[in-house]
Image (cartoon, rainbow, N blue to C red; front, side):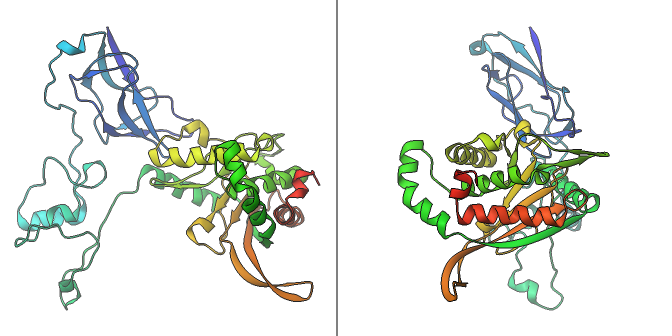
Length: 388
């Protein structure tokens, strides 16, 4: 029986996806749940598995093709004895070879044709370094790196041009929409991390032994945020048309850097999660983000976000809102600094906090008090342990 391999349902906000890579050629046997093809959306890479065991008959959408929800990608025959099916040469339909402008110019000047096998760029794109060869050594000249000759007067200067990925295009669109569609302000404060670091140092070994997960710092920040949002629920609210919507739950998006760019998976019902639950989910998100296995459902929604520029060494920044959310907390690198405590100069591990908020909904008073509540919860974790 012939089966259709279709694009899985995409989120309502996603209009199309791109065929990223086929892992099986036409005529090849496949097992049930074997990965057939990767589909890239502006948020994640989706893996499309085989629904049954059988043979992949025909690929209808090649690499680089744009597809929509439920569109047919390929046809397969169910139930054939894969051991008797000969494996032909790869017949996956190739997308047209894409030659980048710099590479195209060099090819024209040299009277050469592009390789039918494509190049080393994303989706087989032929880049400048794929066509520039040193005739004496045959080595490829690295892209974007100036050689000594390029510093001489009159020597050519090269540029590398790469199309934006679907994820990067979507990020750009959302950032522009955030800037133009909200009245964003940012308030700052500093937090003494001594209590958190001492607590973590004291219990990290027993925590990991009991829960099987490392005790990081993010769970402390999440707990402090949850406590503050419960005291100032407007920070957890959003504007919908002419309505003010305040959820009775707290879904916190935690920004995670991946090879494909920034992703913000959601900690659902964070008010119910233990610190072990939080650390476990964040570790799982981080691992699957690099592998491209974060699902659309895990990236959808969220009532508040946390972004941590400190992992890259940032000391201070103004985070951008993630609409329709009305607030986001930026945390930064913790560094030892001289502080005045009870009239004396002492060294303390300090972290700058930045809370960006939509002033259409949130007044400065609530924003400042909410950030102070987060600061107090981090400087004295017993406050949220005791619900103070």
